[in-house]
Image 1 (cartoon, one colour):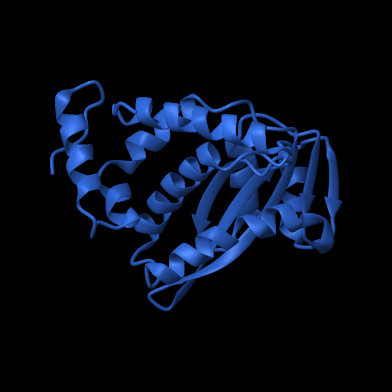
Image 2: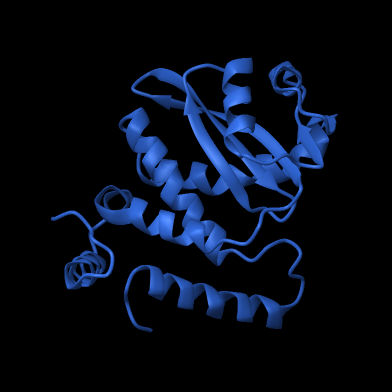
Length: 205
């Protein structure tokens, strides 16, 4: 399949053809043109919250352990994910530095790398470190774990990073924020999400 070019008929036909292939997996879609969709969806995303929950989850690829570092705000919006081979201060610092902005508060587990990264970057904000306080980030790993089992694990570090970038961008779009607490608001959120998705993929509803 050719490379996606937004704004062209080629993109629309390519997307429609891929969606019609019922056997095509989400991983295949992300390889072919998901990254372009993810970039488009991120440009339309709302400003993230100012309370960040940071966590890391172990992912084994071809027998080698890797760590997926993730930042989530108080609404459950996934800010960023970085796959690293190390579970250390350097990896935590990269995740914090990449955001470009600073939170009002950071919530993590007891891993010392987060505090060390904050000090090295000379960030001044409140840091709460307790396992029970970090359920927001820990729960955000569950959909990815489910998808990992369906896909029978990831085949390469690069493929994993590409997939989670697309997967999280789509989840950010369709899953209502935690702050939406009634059925009508959730329904309106999903209508708007589908409108944004259709626009991003150049499809009409």
